[in-house]
Amino acid sequence: MSRVFNFSAGPAMLPQAVLEKAQAEMLDWEGTGMSVMEMSHRGKEYMSIAEKAMADLREVMAIPDTHEILFLQGGASSQFAMIPMNLLRGKKSADYINTGAWSKKAIAEAKRYCEVNIAASSEDNNFSSAPAQSELKLNPDAAYVHYTPNETIGGVEFDYIPETSGVPLVADMSSTILSRPIDVSRFAMIYAGAQKNIGPAGLTVVIIRKDLMGETLPGTPSMFDYQIHADNGSMYNTPPTYSWYLAGLVFDWIKQQGGLAAMAEVNRRKSDKLYAAIDGSDFYANPVAVNNRSWMNVPFTLKDAELDKVFLEQAAKKGLVTLKGHRSVGGMRASIYNAMPEAGVDALVAFMAEFEKEHG
Ligand SMILES: *Cc1c(COP(=O)(O)O)cnc(C)c1O
Image 1 (tube, helix red, strand yellow):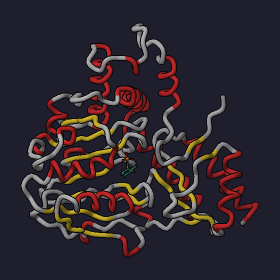
Image 2 (tube, protein in one colour):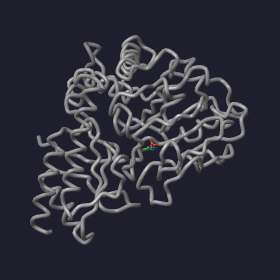
Image 3 (cartoon, protein in one colour):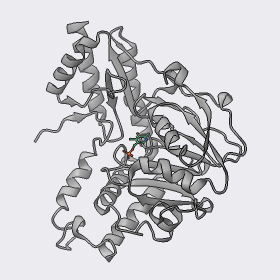
Image 4 (cartoon, helix red, strand yellow):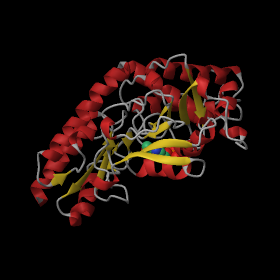
């Protein structure tokens, strides 16, 4: 068997230990004679799996009792609509910070439900930085402030949590959740599609302050109402049971690695190595302001775009795959989430030096 280093932005690599455990339990979970996939979501075996996964996420992220955890479906993209439906709570407008492709999608969807005030935008500098706190034009009457702490496509990350003077702060953490410790109490809501840093696609994690639920826009479907999901333990309907189970294995793995502090240490080291390789050469470039460079998604270009194809081909021969940049920006992108071993980054850095020697 040979596994590659997969730099995909999502669905992305999972820890090998997690896949091996799932494999070992595939046909017979703990003597039940059935796969987790085949279990009733309301049976006691599956309930024990589900409850442990939620409890482990609460422990790993130190989520306070003021916040509910919901395991939903529909991806982060459904949240773009569910947020205004649930959080406008009688208000007419919301603040959005625009830092790239995912912010824009969230904004476009919110405009279907409310007035959107763009509190700040880095579009003028081609989304190569995140606005500073002093640049945010926040409306004190906004229902909430939405931002994208890590833009997965542009590789742009906030190096601070916006201060919103009591207005609920909502964060799309799809590509940065679990990458380091965060103070959950600063957020009214955090959400993330699972397929980047949590587990397989199909599960969407929502962490929301309990006092903000229960006041939806008229006509909101039950499936889009956070309170209904909370009242039903995220089992109002059949949840994505297998993705939930695998996410649980990932939370367990994170605990075994030493938790989010340990994740942060490795993630910082991995991204430092890769940016050092890019900055140390005239052949590679990354356009993002140094203090806003993402730990998780590292886009870079080659000096000559004509070489992109050869770069990708030769990298793949070394087992370094899915390095092609997003179609909207071109070049390369290395996504290096928790499950990317440091050895994968070392191998990429070594290959980049070799390639430059040959083609630079
Ligand atoms: C991937 C991603 C999304 C979209 O997630 P889906 O689960 O495919 O809807 C939204 N926001 C960010 C920041 C992402 O990285």
